[in-house]
Image 1 (tube, one colour):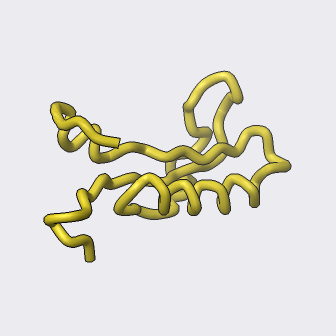
Image 2: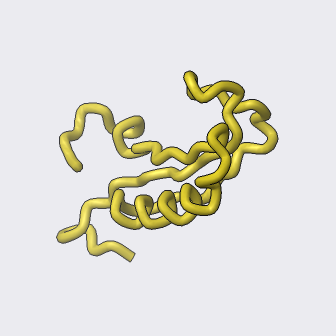
Image 3: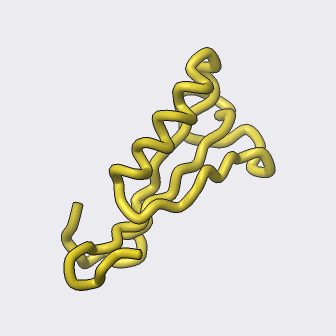
Length: 80
């Protein structure tokens, strides 16, 4: 657990799946979107993203993304 005095929690979500087109970020089937997980910082989200992206490197239509949830939850805050 993060110490509230030293570590600021910056939530990140890693999701992915097959896109309907490689030109747009539109998932082909929302029921099949892979919700990889929720992470307390960008560094740990990046590790998860790399693992999933590497597993799907042969599928051009499959993409994974890191969503910066902390920016959505607190858009006024400045942070990493």
